[in-house]
Image (tube, rainbow, N blue to C red; front, side, top):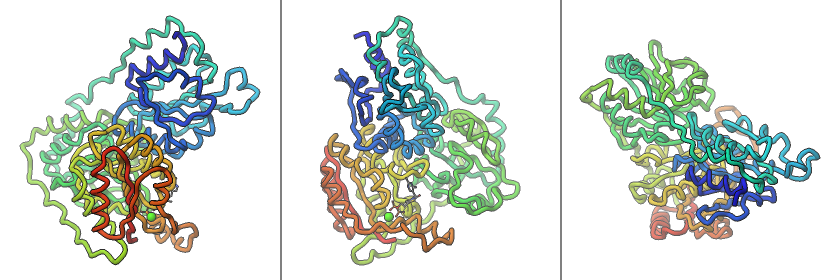
Length: 526
Ligand SMILES: Cc1ncc(Cn2c(C)c(CCOP(=O)(O)OP(=O)(O)O)sc2=O)c(N)n1
Ligand SMILES: [Ca+2]
């Protein structure tokens, strides 16, 4: 088979991209024709779910991941999920079928007009090849653009009349290509920073998602141990970069200028690694930093360094930056701070569980190597104060706060890590944005344990409503949802829990089966 389609599958095979997430239309069928037996196609019933599953898979595997959507309508449905993938630097190659070249000019049905403009600014690179013979090179470029620093989603619109065109000999070079990224920082670049950190009276570490994405969690532990420094997770946390049971661990920084300033008080040198400076959310203005504080910023993303409002930035591999600092410091290790005291738990009321109690119980019941996908937006403190996470890839949250990530991403993370169990902690509001992911979990026997926290309201918005003096806003309650009935409708076994005993029973039942998903709807307090 000397078609461009067969060559493209060969190229995808070379990069290990044999799992495809998609939802097809007629524009995509010529690409999917003669589907190779060593590829697997994961169908999502709505394109936000397709993108969310692919995002979870790409983040957990760290590998470029192929998405195939239907023209403009499919791309539009996926844009919300793309906001998260863009900010989580997810290496996705998003392809969309385009109408046949001869019908595009008259804008026949299913023409994706100005296709390369459609996903911007939520992709790193977007392209529609000017002729069929450029499709393989464009696919190769999309894969390298998605994976080279700074990683991120790319978009290719491909007219379906291209796939049956013949390849030419020039394309064979693409199968021989290699693309490598150079070494990290020069030791001299870290020497000064190491001296500054070593001489600091009270250094502080703030760690972001790139630390977890680059598996630099243990390098961060070595640095914290060498400095005896407390460690915070950077605000708007989308991953867990540091073991939460380490004595230096303090929690997740708050999400406003004023509150972060308060947490930085007393620290003269603050090292931020693998996060923007900072990903604020709540608008409480104030002075960025305590007087005299120095911020040293290691990031793999030059645009984060460029837009930061303060700090001295070094753009390099975060893992090599942290490891280089540990070597340059050459410290035997200073006394670690005392661990943060455990929060007091209060008894549950009849008929519901406090989120703290639910997470405390979940932490006891879940296996040590569990991986969490979270999208319950009013329970951040409750989760981070109760849940122990010690390994990379233990936590995923929508990086742009675009809801509809949780359920689908949990399916993608579990597909990427079959050796670990995935627990999705999802709010009863968030669950609805990507609810059809339940069907994909059932169809592909993906054993995610979906825990729906049912408090009947958009809890996080109630918090914002009082901050913004908008308590009387409409549309903040989501009563009368029965997630057990919904789950059964999509083929997922489910149970409802109103207390700890029932939750424990249902969770054990879910853990006992490792070839199909289970949903537990838990009534929680707000
Ligand atoms: C796609 C989308 N739509 C709407 C929102 C707005 N939003 C909404 C609707 C939230 C409430 C989520 O409620 P929940 O039940 O999932 O969780 P909590 O009750 O714990 O807040 S938090 C938030 O930012 C969003 N972030 N993303
Ligand atoms: Ca809720």
